[in-house]
Length: 180
Length: 180
DNA sequence: AGGAATCGTCAGTGGTGCTGATTATCAGGT
DNA sequence: ACCTGATAATCAGCACCACTGACGATTCCT
Image 1 (spheres, rainbow over the protein chains, first blue to last red):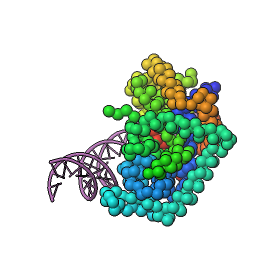
Image 2 (image 1 turned 60 degrees about the horizontal axis):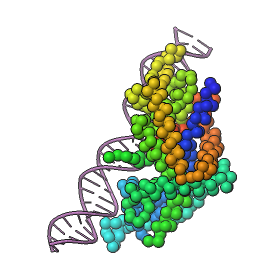
Image 3 (image 1 turned 90 degrees about the horizontal axis):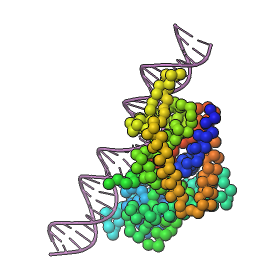
Image 4 (image 1 turned 90 degrees about the vertical axis):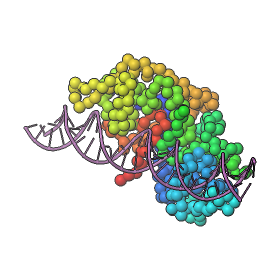
């Protein structure tokens, strides 16, 4: 029975294990923090992107910007629309496009929920002192930049714009790596 | 079009986004590195745990140790057994239990694949200097310890032993957080 | 001996994301 | 003007993963 210690050690020594678990914990915290506002972390991300730019964006561009699949974006916007947080309008310049805009309720929800998100992230990082937390995020961003720029081109749909991967909810990603 | 920059900024400022993406990248690297050995990261984790302790472990204990579901463990061991990497034996002391042991091929595979895993982790951390990388893993471990001990009790199945969550593969986790 | 508990197994479910086909719309060449 | 090709949104279907709940087989406790 002395192996338990070595076993736990073996686990926490694995970077993948640590990262997965840390991510899962954060995702759980985010989900709980956002639950009172009736939005999934994924939806909050979409709301943020919609609100972030003044120009009206099509669903496709939205999806590409977040790194979400277009077909998934349809469902997400369906949900947001059902909650009255966003509205779909047909673009007058290009009637193929659906321009998605925030409603007032959407703006309010985004503001409140995003504050909850920041608080949840702070709670997640609470065990770390400020300097360590800052270094952690900086290191993560370095890794993100270094690894993403290399492969972003493969999944970038909108040229001239870095694609990215889905927001921080705890959903699984399939991400086929090397399928012919 | 000046919004693109602000958009990417908005993304990389989100901790959840950074963590998810970093984790996904690492998981992809692991999957690719392990592909030549025909093992999933998840399977490598199971192999490691089996090999880690001298005592023979039942599937249930294996699952509890890794934080994997018992029913999932069945499928994983099925796969490993199909590849000839592990063997199931009925315990003579308790014939309910299946004792899982590594075959010679399993030992070889584990040794080689685990080396590949270490290399993949190193490649993932390559953009960081040694000190930063060490701080990152230390911070992750701190977060892991702080957050896990609080909620581990809820999912610990085997008493006296810290449960943990699945290994570093890029599969999704459902992890019901607060279901009555 | 008999009831409670444990182990392994399997079928079913929910949730996620992706592929492929469909419809509507725009842009370009002739 | 017309046909061709490309793009936007949508929908149905598939694949994957993990979990829930049930079931026989076996063991432990009283």
